[in-house]
Amino acid sequence: MKQWFERMGRVFPKLHIDIEQVEVTGWPWNTTVFVKWRANARLLDGQSSYVNRGVHVFKLRWGKVYSIEEYFDSQAAERSLAIQARAGLDEAAAGPIVS
Image (cartoon, rainbow, N blue to C red; front, side):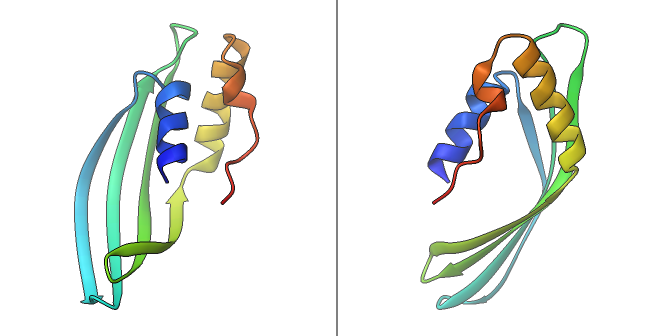
């Protein structure tokens, strides 16, 4: 997770994320957390913006994340990453981070 968020900060240096809603259900040994968010950033070409909305679903066991599901507009993210890469940010074209 840390590597993913660090890369997001480098690829979208002007990223702003608003958390709209958080819901938590379950017991300490099996907790589900739903996070609804909205994101936007000015892109390096000076003309475009990244705008997206989504939900992350975290599964926790005793307070530690063991799985994450993401639901967001992946095409909007791909378009914005391509703009960042064309503007000279090589990491925007890098492969996914895997654990």
